[in-house]
Length: 162
Image (cartoon, rainbow, N blue to C red; front, side, top):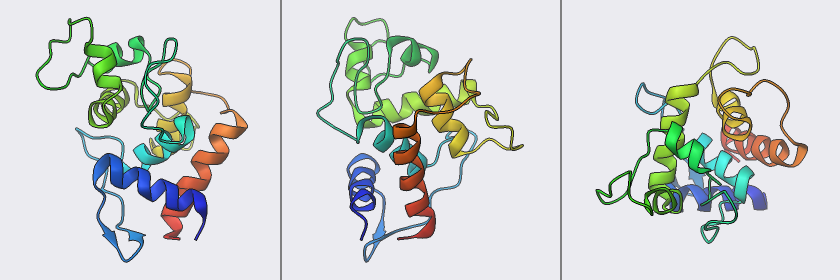
């Protein structure tokens, strides 16, 4: 089995509790109005942006395994953990460093900025990856080779059920 696929499955399990059937992930959840990004897509974005490094805390102006900036978190609606006020000084870092809150921030950002970035007539995981990396106002264009290579390999492995 491909090493990246095993790491991606481990990341999804750790992040979102994906159900497994004898080493194979269940089909990804359908995108919904409240959750535009599937769990598989979140896992692959995480894999591409930080290798799903749960020890990746704040480094410069980015925090957590999704490498969120304060502006991204704010544009996402300032989600918080444990009822913390979004105006608390620690709210951004606490959310960005918590896998579930950070995933909620990604969902909120995609609700706000979801668009067809690659011009294929639909909004899907590839668009979400572009938006996450390039931002809601500049998602048209290419992704860096390293990010896009890891992202595409992860997504293709899940879609192929390898």
